Length: 219
Image (cartoon, rainbow, N blue to C red; front, top):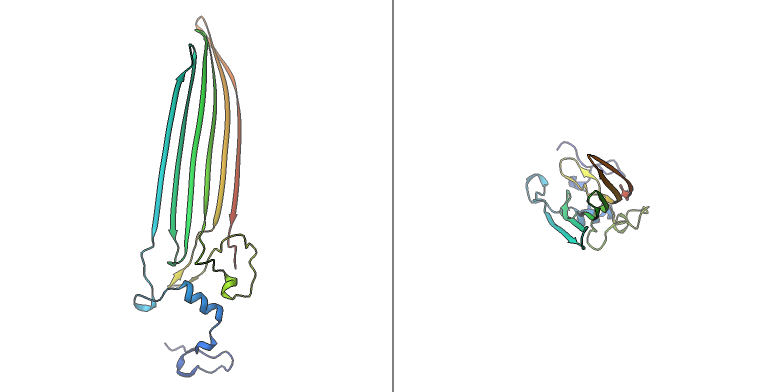
């Protein structure tokens, strides 16, 4: 290359066009030693197949029961559990994703008479997401590397971001937690008189969504 590394102190080229190790920033050296793998391909590149694992389980249950004449209870339950382990732009950087959804429903039907029917139903559904970066080794942070800066969110695992164009991009998933719940209660009455049917009832619904997002929690 026509461009040679220059000593910023003397403005002269380094001897042999090589920067001496004593001039390396200690924090940068630790960063390279811990996070950046050695090249395994031409051009100083490290090529690897990004590991990805996924486990998924589903549970479905249903029950029907007649309680004497005119009384029926039935319910169902569904749960889907998904767990993923993702690798970011560097082999040492990983994150996990836990995504669970569930739904529970119970229905009670009372046949009061051949012309009068009452049905009460309760349901509960939940979406639970917990995604975030996994610690590097024993919890390496910018501070532990020697960077003179204090994290504003020490309670969270360090989220590594940054890149060198044409070589690597850390791009680790940030922390996101979501807890979304919905409660619903319904009561419906059906009444038949001659050739006419009357239906009336009520419904109560309560929904909540708690979300926590930590973007770029470290410099």
